[in-house]
Picture 1 (spheres, one colour):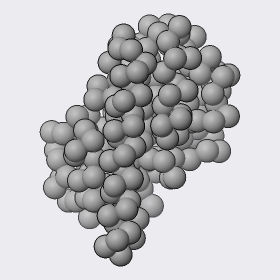
Picture 2 (cartoon, rainbow, N blue to C red; picture 1 turned 90 degrees about the vertical axis):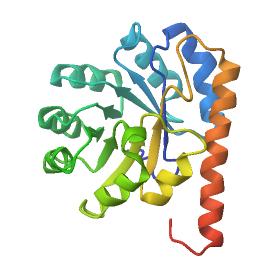
Picture 3 (cartoon, helix red, strand yellow; picture 1 turned 45 degrees about the vertical axis):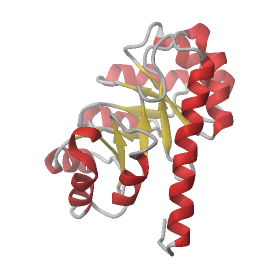
Picture 4 (cartoon, rainbow, N blue to C red; picture 1 turned 180 degrees about the horizontal axis):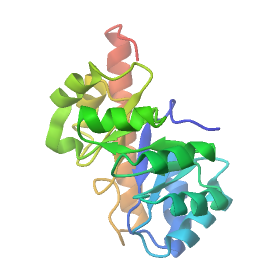
Amino acid sequence: MKTMTTAPLVAILRGIRPEEIDSHLPLLIEAGFTAIEIPLNSPDWETSIGHAVSAYGDRVTIGAGTVLSVENVDRLAALGCRLIIAPNSNPAVIRRALHHDMQAMPGCATPGEAFIAIEAGARQLKLFPASFFGPGYVRALKTVLPASVELFAVGGVTPETLPRYLAAGCAGAGIGGELYRAGQPAEQTQKQALAFIAAHQRFITSSQQNGESI
């Protein structure tokens, strides 16, 4: 199963339509994103995810966001979706995703929510909304989380703040409105994607120059 350990930025395409998949996804893949989330509150999400899996699933991890029910996990598994992302920590959703050999990234805001998700088997957590908590909160939360659990900052992350979250201990980030807004031209998606990839690369280069482990 593919993982996101080598390119830890998840592109969140909330509101994308099926006819826009082929104009945006190739540009995101070319820029360097290896995980793409299509939230279930997007128009005709089943068609979009099914096509994305069929056309690009061998090049990128196709995920679904705002997954709130076990029934939708089953539908997504049938489509070939590989990543389940949620705004909450629902043990039933987490366990069903793992049952289908899918990655599960439940949302959490507190240590209590984080450990509910971990107990259910999650090894990747989504801190949301990250911009409300900030990098300092990430550092504090990381002191109590198991080292094997990866924390992703989601919500309000920009190219300027991304390195701060990574330096605080986040394994990566989910990028939503700062990358893509429904209806925007593919060229804008490409421009924003390249800005985030460049910010991530600057962080890697700086860490290596400072002799820090990544």
